[in-house]
Amino acid sequence: GAGVSQSPSNKVTEKGKDVELRCDPISGHTALYWYRQSLGQGLEFLIYFQGNSAPDKSGLPSDRFSAERTGGSVSTLTIQRTQQEDSAVYLCAIPPGQNYGELFFGEGSRLTVL
Amino acid sequence: AQSVTQPDIHITVSEGASLELRCNYSYGATPYLFWYVQSPGQGLQLLLKYFSGDTLVQGIKGFEAEFKRSQSSFNLRKPSVHWSDAAEYFCAVGARGSQGNLIFGKGTKLSVKP
Image: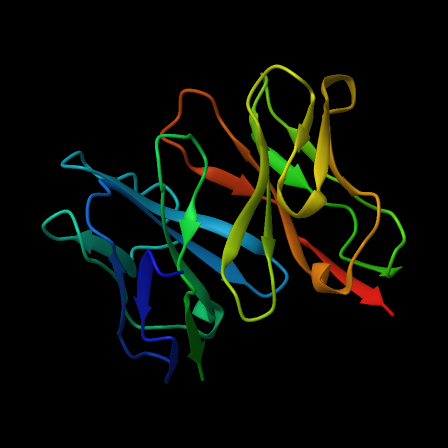
């Protein structure tokens, strides 16, 4: 969506390589989420940023996954030593208002690991 | 543990027919409940939500959903389906008091026959 820009839209990489996925939300949103959508698996929560608080990393599937959010705006999700099972669409989302659970999703970054 | 089950992976209905998509959740208390839709090539969009109060909630695009505590269900309905409703539908649950991380079902893909 227009409120969340994700790049790259598509990424093909070889197994073992590192990848960085970027999320650039419109300004003014202190909360930011990363989700992963694997084929046939629905959406899986990965990580949550809220202002200056420590992020909730409880959804990260392994220590190969990390994310940061600098300056309270742009966020990058890094996957090290990619594996084929990392192939998925990675979605960034922000809450557009104060209503709990209403998330505005970006169009995602489709990652394919060969 | 919280979970969401969407029993139907794929449903096909004729245009103009009624639709019901099933969603069952597992949660220790009354959760927040959501339905999101993902149209082909588009991002996820919130259809409707239930927080409290009236158990029949209205959403966008003519959709409604009913929260039934006794059945732990939150089924999505539409009286007359349009071809543009073909999409994938995700039910989600959020825990009250949490930071807003949603647990999604695996989705139901809706196809519409002319």
